[in-house]
Amino acid sequence: MKLGARIAQVIPTILLVSVLVFCLQQLMPGDPAIVLAGEERGDPRVLAQIRAELWLDRSLPEQYWHWISNVVHGDLGHSWRTRQPVAELIAQKLPVTAQVGVMAFLIAVLIGVPAGVVAAVKRDGPWDYVANAIGLAGLSMPNFWLGIMLILFVSVDLGWLPASGYVSPWEDWRQSLATTVMPAFVLGNSIAAILMRHTRSAMLSVLDQDYIRTARAKGLAEMTVILRHALRNALIPVVTLGALELGTLLSGAVLTEQVFSIPGFGKMVVDAVFNRDYPVVQGVVLVTALLFILLNLLADILYVLVDPRLRRA
Image (cartoon, rainbow, N blue to C red; front, side):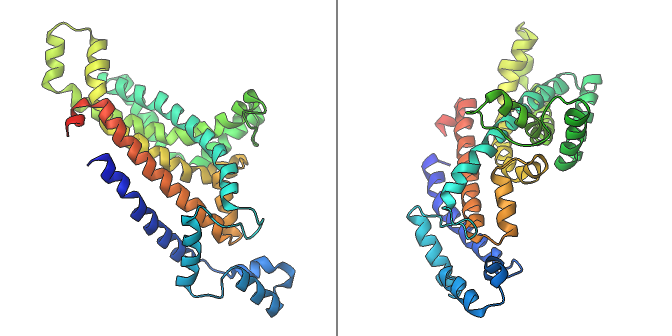
């Protein structure tokens, strides 16, 4: 599919996501007006005033139209709890999660892809069994459990890294690295296992192709055959998986940021849900959906870079 056609799908997809998140959040138990009223929750006049200010006394179509009209003009609304613009909150929290997510993805790629290549080249050997065992363990361990175990061992017992908190890289890049390396490893662990298994499967398929046997028959070095001929073609399905898994880091960050007390995107979502802060939830879901779409577009572009044959499609 042409890139222009994929871009044209962005608007209806975002609109569908906006309708779904707006409708589904109405199923959340509790009345936001009562939560926001605090000690005055028993005063009907206060509740009526809050509902009028937040458009909660209007019909659902009117509420949705009011919200989506503002979104089209670049206004994601204001937090009901802090009165801060939602766009400002997202701009503050998203870089924190992005830093941890990018580090996690790099860790996953540096571990998963080489392990998958080695497992495929050394199929049915000791390295293959070790890689598969580690991959299965990575898929089986919950992120929150692994995070707690790392805190107990690395921070409490050994005292190597801080157990929680976050420092911006603009303040102190060394301390920032120290506070984010453990949560990044926790997030990247399961993705590394997934990348390893898919890389191994793709490499096994490619290594059985005729052109690989031809390259070996010509006397090319084994490393050249694996890296230049086999791996490049095997990376095509891995690129798709990698782009999608990069997007799932945002959802995985919810639990991980809670465990390590990192003030990022995921923690903000959890707080917004518990506080019935609908504008924040809606803004976060829209931004997350847009990031997923952009990552899919990035995967399409990487296809062409990895496989030049697609440029003629």
